[in-house]
Structures are given as structure tokens and as C-alpha cells.
Length: 217
Image (cartoon, rainbow, N blue to C red):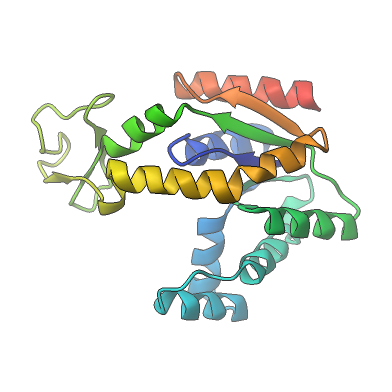
């Protein structure tokens, strides 16, 4: 099964991508992992991406597309893949379609995780991270620490990431609506989109997603 996962920041795409890929026995391909792997291995695309990132510039679509193509040609994708964070705009979606046509394969579905905007802001702006290396994450509403500002696990200081403020989150949402949301209409014209609510417990959302993909297929 070949799936594209789309949704606004804070929709839980990373969590659902991991669970869905495991359930469907297909690799989870995220843009973050693509960049880390290519830069870490020093590939030509990775070096090119790093040069843009070091200069504080956006990595061009053709570099991201090149990385995604290389990854989708690897042996473990023979039975499918789940794309998370790619495509992120219409140009990338069209490039993906062209690539898949060259390989004589098609997408099976596009899963759209839907979350109200105020809930996105609440989820992200309420996150608090531990400054120590354990990676512990709390939330002021959904998973508050026993003592405000202190990690339950190690006693480290909890902090809010600079891009997790309400203002920054709303800016990220504007970018999503402008750049990424149009791909939903693009894929809907192909009859590929299954939209589900991403509210509720993680396992409930996963079950919802699996059922939607079955019905869509």
C-alpha cells in the first residue's frame, strides 16, 4: 500500500505515521528522516541541502524531491510506503505523480488528519520539554507535570520551544493552509482522499485511519 499522510502541524502525523507503517508493514518515509540520512551520509543531495540550511535558506523542492525519489527506489518499498511531510506543496505532488507514473505504480490513498485550528494551537502551545537529554515531553493541559516547570522523570527544567508560542503556531498554520492544504483538493480530484478526525486517543485515531484506508481502497 502506498499512502500519503497529510494534516496541519499538531495533528499527530508523526505518531500516526509510525503506528500505521508498523500495522501495514511498510516503511515510514518522513522528510525529516530523509534530510538527516542524506546529510549524515554526505550524499550529493545531502551536501546541497546542508549548504542551503547553513545559509538560513529554504531547501529547493528539487532537492527534496530527489531525496524522496531515491528513498522510494530502495528495496524495502517494494510492497509500499507511507509518505509523511512529502509532498508539502502542489509542485511536489505533481513531481511525485510523474515519478510514480514512470515506475508504473500509483498511490492507494491520501489520509487527511483533520483537527480544529484552536485545538492545534492548544496542543502545540501547551507543550513543555525537559532541558535534559531524556526527551521527556509534558503538556500543561493533557499531561501536566506534578510540579509546574519540573520534569517528573529527572527533575529537569521544563521549557517551551521558541516556535511553540501561539503566535508562531498560527503562522505555521497559515503556511500550511497556503502551501500544503491545496494538495488535498488535488488528490481529491483523483478520488484518493480519506479525511478523518485526529481528535481522541491515539489508538482510536489509528483504528479510524485503517478503516478509512480500507474503505477508500
